[in-house]
Picture 1 (cartoon, one colour):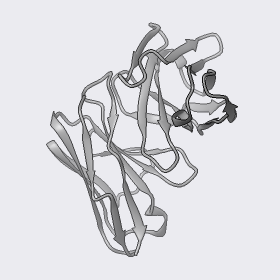
Picture 2 (cartoon, helix red, strand yellow; picture 1 turned 120 degrees about the vertical axis):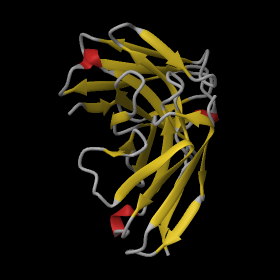
Picture 3 (cartoon, chains in turn cyan, orange; picture 1 turned 60 degrees about the vertical axis):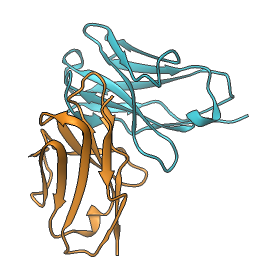
Picture 4 (cartoon, helix red, strand yellow; picture 1 turned 45 degrees about the vertical axis):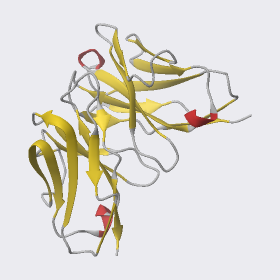
Length: 118
Length: 108
């Protein structure tokens, strides 16, 4: 079973950027795809985008286009999500999730809280 | 973008009762629908995939059904640990995944 461990909580200023990591272990990184999902306080789940590391192919939700960059480092089995031009509305819990290409999310990280405040 | 609409937003039931949660898609899907359970302070957990297949370790009281635009999660004989928020997700329109807005199952 793949385990996903995310980096710790972040507090950022509006206009800055944040980069959250998600390290995978326990299974084959290269045959997996990964997505990032965020959840604002008291709100539902919002898919932001994903990556297929073996191909380096990335996909983004329309609402994420232009501000989100998802990357992967196969040598460390780590996936990253960088969000730029932060605003208060980006305050949320950010989850990484593992799935096969085009399939449901069968493993989740523990979440990383990103707080944006001046 | 495929919109997933869940209803009701909140469902109040007592332990031992059965729960029926609904999810409607804005266009017809194949069986590429999943259900997740989320408890406060935790990551979501996969319950059902392929509209009707239970994930590993999920109790038999959880069942999924549906096709086309209408999908249902049924929880028979509610246990105290079942009170949580439930989300449906479509992965038919990959790579564009969408979730429903969630149904909160609370103790009456």
